[in-house]
Length: 251
Image (cartoon, rainbow, N blue to C red; front, side):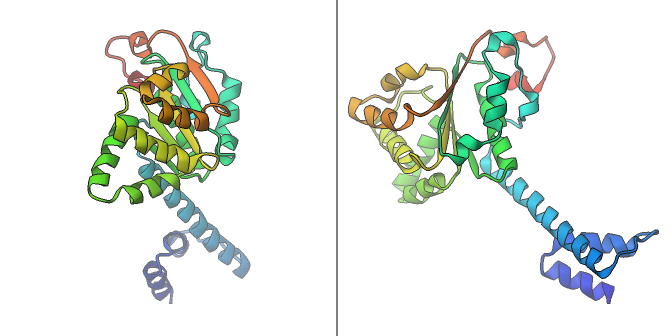
């Protein structure tokens, strides 16, 4: 009977329940459960397994640049990173409210790592997150538009609770990229959070986007109620000792 039950659990993809029940019947010192306790144990095991697999799918689909966590962040005084602010952001209320976050600073100051840490924290809390290098995303959407598939891609982006646009403004936007960026911002405005990392200060984003009318439309939607973090200091890459590799060696 147990073998038949295990087989049916497997065929129904009740993997957590299958593992828990198999462990119980194969244990050299089996625990004694009441009927209610056994049901609770099996259901809880299935729940935990599905939550874990959902989290792993979320992290994989997010395609983060770095494997980062809030606990790994460096709050050295000269960086301009406020631990209290980061702790508040790690609660992800800003994502729940659909607020935007801008992280600016010179190259190597940890912008991408911070964005990835907040993004992965959001995944842990059940939010859908997508990380994208801005230039590569625009190139991908241009190719999708040529194939007639860009609306499907834009719809996928719109559904993400948090979109991380990394390295924003490294390359100026051409006409097609500006239009695609406006579509993304318009779809998400007031409904979903967008986290932008950039070496270029926010006051110069108009120049980066180009074409005043579209730049005004984009900036009007993202700037006024955004949360901002500006990072300072010497590049963290330069601070690393020779032949020393840490999580923040790749910021």
